[in-house]
Length: 403
Image (cartoon, rainbow, N blue to C red; front, side):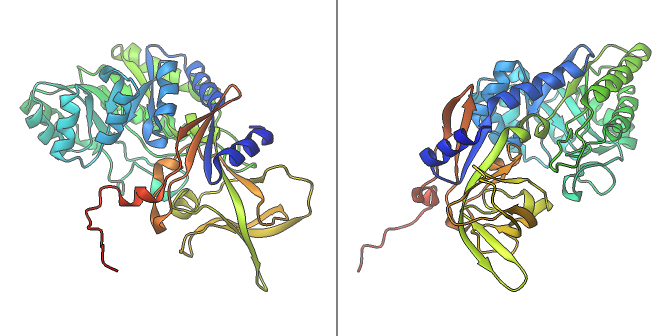
């Protein structure tokens, strides 16, 4: 986005503020759609990446379906106008009431364990269901986002095919989908293809299967030296792999479930420098946001480029960029080469469109930031900035009227 636009947004809505470029989202969706020639296929947006209804509306208008992982995300998807037939509920360790909520809204469920399958069968016998498989393969940019393998809590281990079938028969469940998700932020697509190959092997054991869901995991380059995912080669090899399976087995629909790939590069978090301090070894640049608003660097040791808006060719220096939360781990960048910064400077933390606001909290009783969508030059407020009154929401308390 142009610096002039970002400056205008910061001045109008203050900082910190999340800003998303709709054109980036649309372009990423269309690139992915065009790269995978296999048909029939469906793309389900993984709404946990960014669940603002304005973002969900973008995907709805593109004809995209949606993946949800909680009753709250299901509620938002319905509010955004998605038809229940466009929604897949892929939760884990769900309570009975959460599964009942999906059943009440006629939404297809992906079961994540044999015990969940048994419970769901009692709640909704005779229904269709999707099953999440752990293919004993995991990958991702950090150990916390690896969702396959023996150490992962997700999915039913791939050797349990007979137990899955027996449990389905007990409750007359029709297994129409086989699902996997091995991890997040993957740039080496051959790892994904290896997992998909294992998933297809499992799918061959289920005669009523109608679709395979290969999950998400498609990464984006956060560092300038990283090579982007070769989307064209991935799409070509994926299409070939699934077509080969179809020739040997039956017609199926291919489902992709990306989140980060579609929205991450659309977003920046605008923040202003509030303080600069030096000690004999380091220079610390403090800003008016913290890991309560953007957790990825603290939780995943994630790297995000930071850009000075309206850079006027200043000399550069090595600094640590830190937030305003009372925690030593509230660091956005360590030993980063940036232009010389001073109080009031406007910075953009880049590639925050995924797992930014959706993971934010009010820790330290600091209000949530505003969110803005830029659509063809139009600046649209899609979430108001939080207020102090938000801290009292749902609290039960008495006002002390005594001096």
